[in-house]
Length: 283
Image (cartoon, helix red, strand yellow):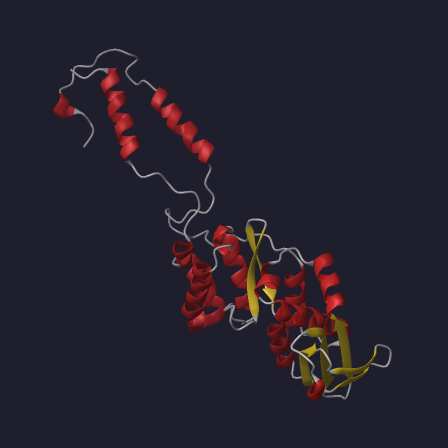
């Protein structure tokens, strides 16, 4: 005869043997979600598979990124996808940067150049590091600059110069010393992720961004990129249509409370029940 206690023991054994639902989902699982695939295909078409593969490759290669919320990585990557920029860190067009447990989109200096060229309004655009001995003259008022690359004294970088000329003849030049870039970094940078990986690339991006945002022709696409680069992005859940196992938000306390209530529930009011062992409703 099975008693209430034996039934409870069977219930407890079932719960202990069943797999526990994981909090969140793996990056690989998210990228295989039909809803995520659909969103990337809507933006990138046939290139969606290649793009999502690059996200997974980036995620697997960055330990700091693996500590960030998976859906925030997807959201940051979606920004890059809408701008049609690769997230491969070796290319330098765009980065996915971990900050405060979440990932954020960050535009690289090559990304700014790419978006500027797409407007069809730029005749020339470039930014370069200036090494010790190369800078001969710089007038910030008239923007007259003279650089002699043959007079480089060492590989030490002392500053960064950016220049563009539009098809209509309008031109602009800026030069920042390394100290000016460092001051800007300390004031505005929220994370050392990009600076620690490639200081010069981040410095070039800072100088180029300053000249384009003030004096350049900004398409709607470029305006969006500047805003996304400056503003922390809230996580956007694009897995609403995902199947059950692909759950992003999970309330652990609520699940434990439900399990406790289930264990405390006695459907037989403590009375023995005549039931043979082979009639128990368990496998």
